Image 1: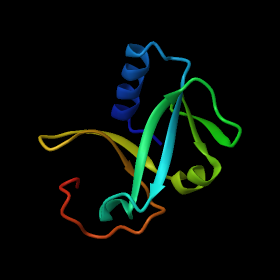
Image 2: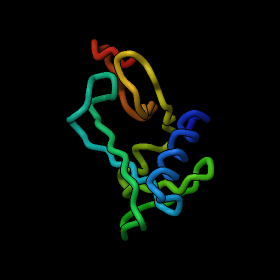
Image 3: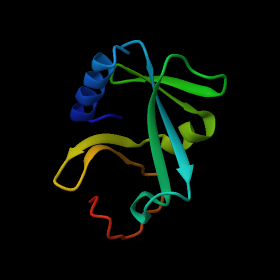
Length: 107
């Protein structure tokens, strides 16, 4: 699920990149993230078409894809866009990972 602000920002990116027909690919990398993300890091990219192992869903009018394992890990996640003095960008809140306290300032 995308928050309204995340949907707006993604649509702005799609328009500015002249990629309105593209898919948003979300990838999950284990062992590379902060404790607040359960040790996972996420990557977002725009792709022209899905790969053979990608699962595609339309969410909030956006074409979103992930490989099968990542799609299962991402199910139920909320994607938001945050703007603060410390960071600006997309944030994925994933209910499928165990969250530990950390000092990254991303909360």
